[in-house]
Image (tube, rainbow, N blue to C red; front, side, top):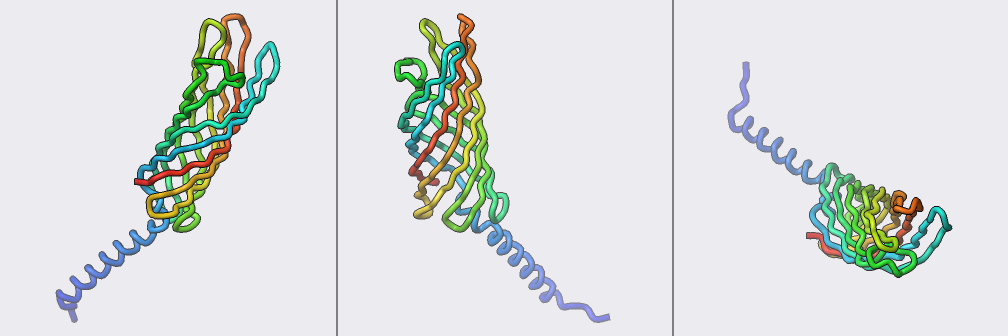
Length: 195
């Protein structure tokens, strides 16, 4: 029986290990461009629809700045998973007179797809919270949020984002028996930095 020299066996193992390491790195190469923590400054055109019962529907538009932090982790060459949090510096109020309906915030999960080395599409789902007032008292509103977006990287770290999202605040029941339900459609542009 002929046996292989020890050196050949060791070289073969080394070659297999290096090939495996290279393939693992190559498999995640595209999605790894989007990994890590990001911070973005946002500007949203919000179309706010407030349905009051009794009463009617009031719709308004407002431009609202905000900030988003997020984190992405590659799970394959194309797919990423992550989490995000957003704080808006504006209001959920349709009349512009509610002193308590400021600084709504949102948190949730994201799933991304690397279209190429610089462009990632994503979907997000989360929860939103905001104060909301009626004369003499206020409540917290909350509800589900959904969105689709694109991140485009100019450099390794600097990116821009375009996003369409909807915030669906559940009905708030006031002490007098009336209630409000608020839906916000947001069109957002951002500039950010990935760490």
